Length: 153
Image (cartoon, rainbow, N blue to C red; front, side, top):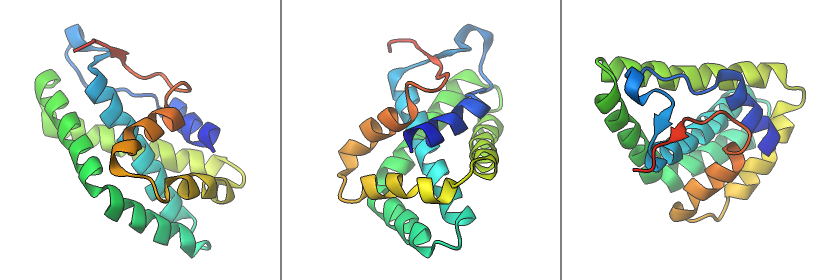
């Protein structure tokens, strides 16, 4: 499952609208927030695409209820990033989130047995605590994608 989620991210990369000086450079907090949003987006696409497996929608809804604060925090971190690096932060944020969804959707369409494969990720999330989500997202997403370089701040 990690390969499925990671490959979807690889397909779309992480092209974000940033100033030239900050292009390809993100703080560890921005990288973590990106990974959480990537995971959330993958699960959302799975819930919508796999309507023949209603347990996915139920699992996604449980995920959002359990990790709502972390998902919201990741959005705040990303918006702050775009406010620092873009002349049009809301537009850049919206474009970034849309690109994540488009990439996840494209991957789900092109992956045989996508719906069956994502079941393992939903199972892995059950019983997880909120503070465990960023590390889970990092191990699920990271290592297989072209994340922005870490700036160290």
